[in-house]
Image (cartoon, rainbow, N blue to C red; front, side, top):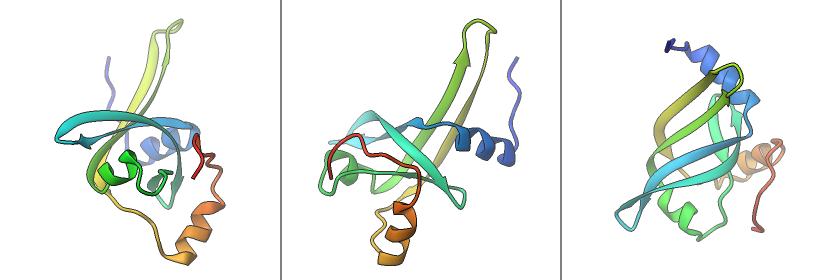
Length: 108
């Protein structure tokens, strides 16, 4: 049975998750990248090295998904988000986001 979730329920589930997937276009082809993420004021935040394929491709409209499945119980959840992605460059915002519990997988 699929049960729709409220906005607040989605935020609560996303806040507990640490890994998600970003769906975007890379060279006009669909691509899905696994990222560590955190929430900040209801926004999904993830790191991308400057100039990387992820950073270049994530500028614009993207889809994001995080989920959890318990195979023993046969239950789980999935939250999907579609929205505009942009690089954060303002020094104050960069400082605020740097304090999030968000570790990079790669240097940069």
